[in-house]
Image (cartoon, rainbow over all chains, first blue to last red; front, side, top):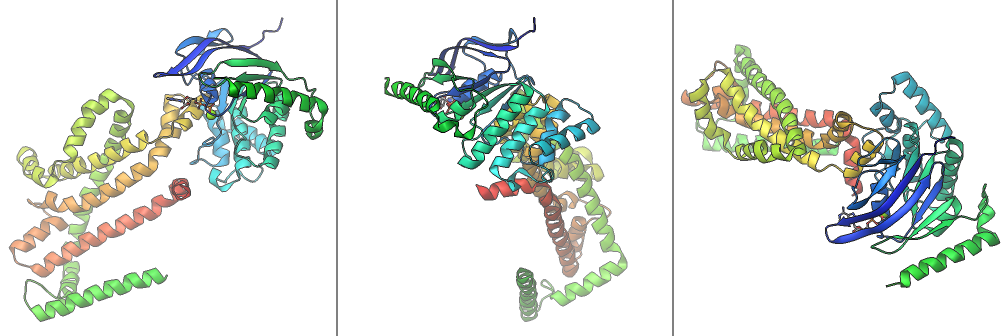
Amino acid sequence: MKKIKNLNIKNLVVQFDDLTVLDNINLTINQGEFICILGSSGCGKTTLLNVMAGFINPTSGQVCYENRIIKKPTSEICTIYQEHALFPWMTIYENIESGLKFSKVNISKRKSIIKKFLHDFDLKGYGEYYPHEISHGMRQRVAICRSLAVNPAMILMDEPFSSLDPVTKLKLQKYILNVWKKTNKTIVFVTHDIDEAIFLSDKIFVLTKKPSTIKKEIINPLQRPRRDSVIISGEYIKFKQFLLKLINKINSDE
Amino acid sequence: MKRLYVKLITLFVVILIWQIVSVIINTDLFPTPVTVFLSLIVMIQEGILLKDILWSINRIVISLFVATILGIILGIITAKISLAYDSIGTILDYMRSASPVALVPFIILWFGIGEFSKVLTLTYLITTVIWLNTYAGIKNINKLYVWAAKSLGANKWCLIRYIILPQALPFVVTGIRIGISFAFIIIVAAEMNGAIFGLGYHIFAYYQAFLIDKMMVNLIVLTSIAYMVDKLFLLITRKHYKWHLIRGEEN
Ligand SMILES: Nc1ncnc2c1ncn2[C@@H]1O[C@H](COP(=O)(O)OP(=O)(O)O)[C@@H](O)[C@H]1O
Ligand SMILES: [Mg+2]
């Protein structure tokens, strides 16, 4: 039987001094799933991702990846942040190259890998630019390339498209779906945008307000591939209404 | 271009005022710019000026070189290890406030009046400046970049080489720039108590011989070199961290 790599969170609690941010979180994420974590601003989504990535140690409980407890960052799990995603002192080429350099991939191999990424992500000709010289959407594409280049099994994304305009956002959502379909990577995608969560996910974890725990684990009923027009289908609207109701309930809970 | 004209006109006006004032006062203690310029020509011909310049610059370059390496290494160590900051850092922080002019006699008493003492005076001062800036630069680093690098598989060495130093670089460069300015200021004190050659040394030698015009030549030459080196340094380093300047403009 093929071994399934999964990420397992058990009884996770995270406190900062007196503030309890995450309170008894339990979840399992399987290899190849596209997971969205949906929660309002300030509820602890970034904290949860940082625990999964090994940057923050839990106050109690544990995070296991392939049955090993995560205590520090590993290159199998790569994080993409909303801002400051790229190193501003490096060119686009050097940014994508950075992870390959860290893992000592030789120069000719680096070259060919980067060339392919620049091509696949419509970044051809931008290699010598600096991050501040290109658009926001392009920057996020470069950040995605940079993570993919080190070939992690799992990619964590923290509201990566939240500051983009709707058109660019849709374009990037399709890029990431494409990448996911081709590479069979596990993606954990944090967002506060219901539509984004519905459009992208296999499964949605809805977080409560702080101190937050998982309110509900929901399987996304929409078939793949999903076209742009899916957002006006009856099934989509029904699912969205369901989520809205759930979120309203969370917000009115005291 | 327009700004260059303003600068040149300013220079001209200053010299003009100097000329007028010194003609009115008419004393050997305040020679005219023309007198000073003529002395400059003589001193160049005699070859003494060039030797003074070379000796002083040599001391400054050696000190800067040693101090930059020391300052950066100490900056990294004190920023990364809190025990090092509390111990070595405290010493450096304290030493930073000790007047180098007051330290010169001690250094001479303990190490003699040779080259070593002069380089030591300069090196000590510049090291503390570069150390402080490197330390501040490393402390100022954005944690997200470090995390991003770690999640791309960076080990400790990669973090320092590719993430921490480049981010701290603008601070380090500022430290080196201040260090250069200080070096040109303190070289005079370092050379005060005797040397074979040196712009600072000869200011005092001319002072005892009452050669005010020659004193002025040395002072102006020293200041001009300091000024030009500073501008040249700025020009060379600026394009290497354009990203930092641009980010600063955005904020
Ligand atoms: N390092 C920290 N120290 C103290 N409090 C923190 C820290 N990080 C986050 N918090 C707090 O935890 C809460 C959740 O933050 P975060 O995980 O960033 O939320 P989200 O990403 O959902 O907006 C916030 O109230 C925030 O102020
Ligand atoms: Mg967040």
